[in-house]
Amino acid sequence: MKLPTKANQYSPEPRDIYLTVPNLISLLRIISIPFIAYLTSQHKMLQALLVLAVSSASDSLDGMIARKFNQVSKIGQILDPIADRLLILCSILALGLADIIPWWMLIIVGLRDLVLLILVLILAQHDYGPLPVNFVGKAGTALLMIAIAALIFADLWHNCFTGLIHLLGLSAGIWGVALYWVAGYIYIRQGYELIHKDGRP
Image (cartoon, rainbow, N blue to C red):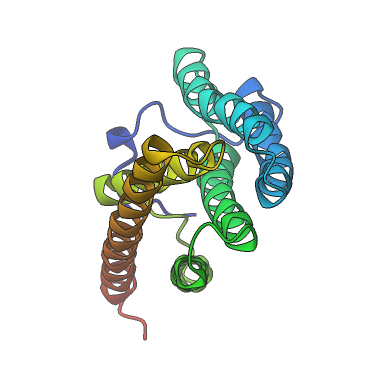
């Protein structure tokens, strides 16, 4: 499988290993997502925040362990963004079911992930792996994560302070969705350039 960019820009180089601590942490993050979504949809926000906090902490932990102990793996580079996207999509779905956010946010985020899934499949047909995460994508993901946490927190109580947190969470979510799509456009352009270099339609 060809790398989309020079591997030495993302050290250490990923290996074909599976049974690692970072991969186990990423898998546990994915397993935690249905619990976060269920608790959020049922307005059990304190429990949802606790599980979300543990999941978010593990996101940084697995990357640190992978780099420190040379356990960066190809499957890990796939599991980590999958966990982020599933968390965002499922959390937004749960917030929609709880009548906390408008449904158009779920549709727009889901459509973007569907487009990128198609891009990944097309790149795989040309023997390319997943594209490396860009800064815009990281910023969009971070804003959406902040928005999800803020909206869950704002539903704990109903007063002026949490009302303000709700509005700030919605604002962060809207900016996050915008950056999410800008990052998607960058990925699509990068994918097109890679395929175009191959001289194949």
